[in-house]
Length: 260
Image 1: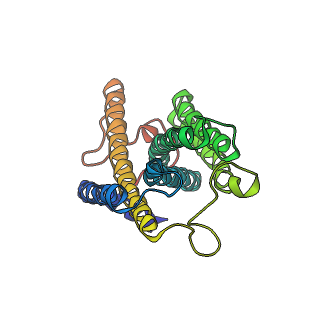
Image 2 (image 1 turned 45 degrees about the vertical axis):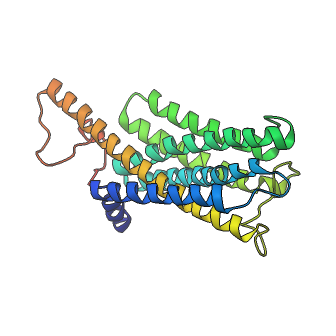
């Protein structure tokens, strides 16, 4: 646990943030070139198939975000460290963004291919439920009347809500579905042309770097928000936070555990 905390601290520092920003920009530029100029259009779907190079990475990053919420929530329940609560909150916000993007891009693809913007297909329905679960998670974080309860309630929901992630992924296998079956993560060789597969893998890598950058920025904003709230509370109570230390709102209010 301590090793993972040290690694997270290095990645979320300002230097790590700048490195991630540069790598993400380079990766997205390479992805755009491969997706638009190198990979051919699909033989059946035509140019609309190019949405796949954003739709699939967005879905993957929704999975990754909500997995991060799950891991950080478990870590918070085990350690009561606010840094894990911050990571869970940041991951949930970014995950909701990518989950919504997945649904919107799927609708844009479905209109010309299926002839409808939306259908109650198992994959679409379970993805919509997933989005609602984590919108509820974010709403819960605004409702709790104390930071301690907010963190604990959110952590519990972050663990329970993760159950829908494997259901979404396996929905096209477990039930009859209009949605395309897996073409890469499947038994046997991927059923996709080599140039398309290369473009897709580069897109996934590039968007993952962009996801990591967004997470680091949101974590930094979260730390600044906590510092501002703590300083405001200290001003009202006459206390002063220690120099050189990033205080925790939760710690000021007497919550068990530290943010060290």
